[in-house]
Length: 231
Image (tube, rainbow, N blue to C red; front, top):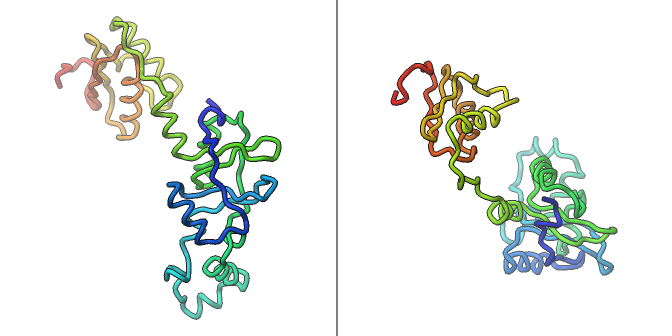
């Protein structure tokens, strides 16, 4: 799956000369938390987000007066940038210009990694220097709901086949159980082994739950496989 498969193509954008008030109103009424800023030719200039509009003098959310020693520690540049963010009247003065972008063929896995690494909520999708879409975290979540198929469970699988599939699902992971610690009875997977960390146990359980044909998964960590499955 790539950016072109999930991106929003109805782009709501701001102009650099748009007023802060109009930009805020556009985001509120469109139900979005940020939008690209483009010039008359459609060239991407920046992004304006809720974060850029949070600290505003007119609503009393500007940065509170800091102690004198913090004021001394802050550079003149930092104080000037802060003042502009709080008092500027146009989008061009508050927008972020350090913009991450992707192309239409960018894999969604790379987009998710980019959003996480940059701690941003959306990324413009570009073609020939023009913005053609936006991929947001919401787009990724919608893709999970609308495009990710459920694990098929229409065919009854034999216990031996299920056991092999569970072992294959864990193969290569450092938390994988040994073969003798996985048993299957009437479609119910029993996972045995030493006492382990909860996070590792969750990973083992999830791997088993995602195997087609599995009806239930029961964990018996800290017990030997010879113990009763009802333990």
